[in-house]
Length: 217
Image 1: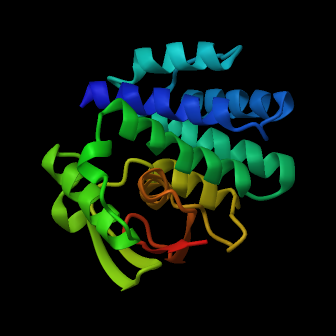
Image 2 (image 1 turned 180 degrees about the horizontal axis):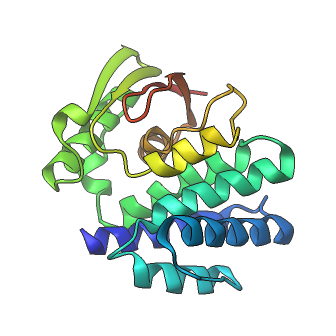
């Protein structure tokens, strides 16, 4: 779904732009590492001078290449190079981008009214299945209580190459695992609708068949 891919690129750029903690030095690292990843994996020689330049060029290739996968790698790698691990930046962008997507696709009315985590995640999953982004069995949600949901992942993961590359290079979060972008997006959707803070923790790492806990902070 090319149009969806373009919206995702724009949403991630928006997440970077709105993350005030990203300094000019970190932004340069992010742009550099996205370029490195694209050269290595797609054999494209793309350089980026700014966020606007990044957005313009990645939107152009989004029909043919998983540009959002490259962005996930670049953000995680740059943050790790700067502070030794992924953390606040990856999570803020990972959760901020889906908030922009909810607005861009006009999904707020369909998700509104949800007062607890499992409800909003289940509604969002139904929407993804309906538009063909995932199959029903790709993400199995289990309610633990009003503040915690287990997500059993499988099927196609759009971020698996970046995830495995970061894992191979020893780029980990504070839990010792690669941050799971698939479920960070779910956490971001929940934050946008419920107006509370949520996070994720990888409990079993075996991409694409991972188990992740989504929980209220």
